Image (tube, rainbow, N blue to C red; front, side, top):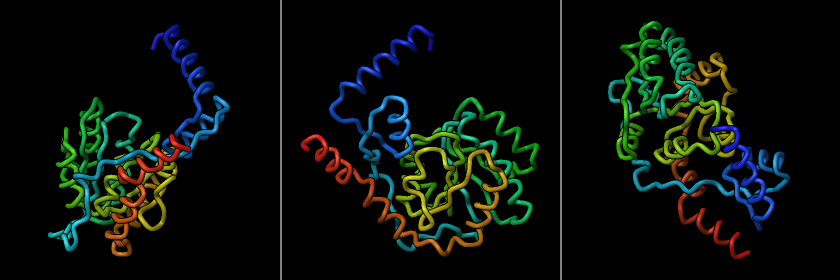
Length: 240
């Protein structure tokens, strides 16, 4: 963004925050940043998530051939740290050969990531899905055991919530949004850019996946983020 345009945008933001009767932020991290920069205390109401495609199906068999499938979904850009995921997965594969990784999404880093997978000698264990629809993502989630995305920054993190809605435990980074909803009942949080921690989290999932109650994960997710729940909170703020 050109400097002059950037200044105009920042001026508009400061005016809006100063004159707004109420400000809503979709995560505690974002609320803290707004308060620090603009001296405004937002109300935290999480994003509405469309669950029409995402649901838990009882008795579904996710590992017909005893293969543990990790799944990730993101725009393939540097900030999503899929390169870190590949490095961690390569370490895991050396210890546990019965796992695979599916990466859904497209972006400018795709060729680099495919080349990295080849150099790490894990190409046969990693598949790149490319562009996907919500329906396709839901289908692939139901085939997988665990969702993992080591992003550097997420204001909220809708893909994690979509995974939880299907009953998938998740591995996420402490990158802003996931801290609000990922806990020991539904996943693992790791520090940013820490390949060893990511490797450990993936190994933990491999060893302990049966400890997670998928139906509970899906139910709790929808109880927190379904459109009617979030809409009622917004209406309450507007009418309050």
